[in-house]
Each structure stands twice: as structure tokens, then as C-alpha cells.
Image 1 (cartoon, helix red, strand yellow):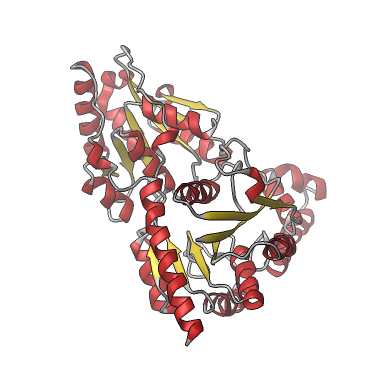
Image 2 (tube, rainbow, N blue to C red):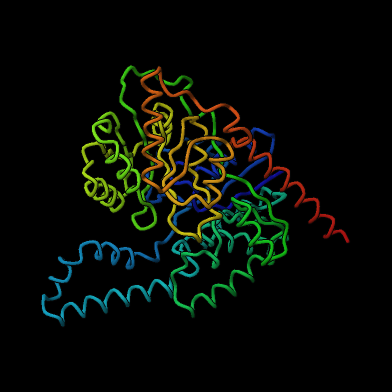
Length: 436
């Protein structure tokens, strides 16, 4: 197959969307397929992901940040007191500040349509058109979010009569965190339907999301999980004589929807024995770090928390592999029951026990239980009991790796095989329908 990916995110930029598309492209090439990628360059993320496809097969274009005024407004919100002082400390000055921010919110709702990456559309579309003059793919795959990638794929389909597959890592307007006003939701829902109705198939990351897409669009829809790549982990796990129980968290912390408080309450319950536990967090999210520090202080265990700067992806995996236990902060929102986190699959690849903090009625918690990969709880008593068992195991020689069955079938290679089969089916159906 000849496959063209349209994806705003791609390595080397370290974000889960880049990692997913980069690994998919890597394995499809290994399977013998021709792969090309149209993406954006100079994205505001750490550029530390490995580049695993030939650079000549990747077209990275410039883009225009249409949301720059709103981005500045967001930064102003973080320093509200100082900004209000620029206007005036009087109520009238504060009102001017509030009005200015609301106007910028309205600006974003109008201009960043359907998303902040719309300024990439003309560059991505033109780059793909130039490529198609010399190389014709069998299928297009557009990875969303942002939905702008879907718009580009749809436009190319209309112009070149190519089948295309939309990959929705999150739902579009059905996303529970859709934050725009109703007038925009109506317009964007119309745009979503108009765009996706031309797709030959859809891909998403969990069965609940796939079910929602099938109901709405009645299109062939495949679940391709995020997975992990065994080649990214160190070949050997370092051995530590340290009797301390190390609990490691890597990645972003979302202040509103992720809480570590039950863990810190459990540590408080352990009393003097808690001194043998260390919770190490590698993250760049300032607001999340502030929140997790505050939670630790609330229970008087802040001395057990070690916050460090985020590290490149492969170093993060090495830290996961070296840990005794991996901390997973699940989202405290029942609307997210159908959402896995990419981190979960990395943790399973590291084969260290997982301590999930949060609700137990979601697909991520189900997977941890099914694979016997750890525990999920929001109850400090239950968590304290499990920590005690891990401490006991540490004293008796260490905590063993999870069995290979915990991660069986979840590698990036195996998940890309699912996508490969699905794309082949999409192409066959499209060719048959075109011939009749």
C-alpha cells in the first residue's frame, strides 16, 4: 500500500499524538508499505522524540498561529493580579480587564475554527497537492486532533478522488470537554458531519469511542490502541539495593481532572513506615505540579514527594522501567470512561506494577484489572494496604516484573497490524464501489 498521513503532530515534537503517528509510520514501513507524511514544523513542544522514518519522506510545513492573541490572554490569566494592576486597581480597571479577556475568547471562537491549527490548512493542503503530482497514494490517513487534518484530507479526497480514513483520538464536537458557545457548536457539528461523511472509514482509540462514531456515521470503524514499542526501553532493568519503595509518575498533570490526594492520604496512614516511600514526578506542567505539591502538603507528606523536570521520552521510559511502582492518575470525570491514556500502555510495556488513583469504572481501570497489572482505587485505606504489601515484598527481595501476559498484544507493532488490515479493507471496498 501507498499511504499518505496528514498529521499536524509528528516527531520530533514530544506529545502523545506525535508518538502515535510516528510509530505507526515506522511499522507500516517495516511491513513493506510506502509511507509519506505531511505535517507541521516548529511546534511549541520539546523536540526530543526519535525520527524513525527517512526525513525525505516527511514534508514539514510552516503554519500561522491564529490564536496568538488568545494565547497571550491565557498567560495573562495566570498572572491576573499583576495585569489588573496595569489597568487599574479600581473596579473600573478590573472590569476593563475582564472585558478584554472575554473579547479575546470571542476572537478565538470566531477565528480558530475548527481549532487552533487552522492556520496550518493552506500550507498542509498545498504541500500535499505538490506531493500528489509525483506520487499517488492508495489511501489518506488524517490524524485528529486537531480536526484541521481531517479538513485537509477531505479536500484532497474531493479533488483527487482518493479514499481517506479519519483517525479521531478524541471525539470532535462530541468531546465532553468541548468548551465553545452553542452557536459555534451548531456550526462545527455541521462541519464535522460534512467532513466525515466522505470518509471511507474511521479509527479511534477505544471501543466506547468507536461505538459512538458508528452510531453517528454508520461507517466502518476500527479500534487501534496506542500501544508501546519494546525497542524504546532499556534492555536490562537496573538493580537497586536501596530498600526504599520508589513510585514514579512521568508526564503532564492536569490540575482539575487528576488528583493524587488519595495516595498522600494513604501515605499519612502508614505512619513511620511511609519514610521508606518516595514519590517521584517528572513533569513540565506548572499548574499540575503546584496542585500535587499542595495535596502532599495537605497530608503532611510533602517530604516524600520529589518533583523533577520532564525528561526526553526514552529517558522517561527508562525511569519507568527502573521504578518499583508506576503511578497513574486517572481522570475524575465519569464522561471519560471510554478514554485510555497513552501513558497506561507505556507503563504496561515497562512491566512494573501500576498504582491507579481515581475511579475504577473506566476502560483504563478495566485493562489494569484484566491484565493483573496492579490496582486502581480512590480509597486511602485500600491504597495503604497495597503500599504495605509492596513494602513487604521490597524487604523480601524486591517486587518482580509483571508477567509478559500483562502487555501481550498491546505493542505498537501489533496495533499497527490492526490498522494495516483495516486500511486494506477500506481500499478494497472503495475500489469495488468505484468500479460499480
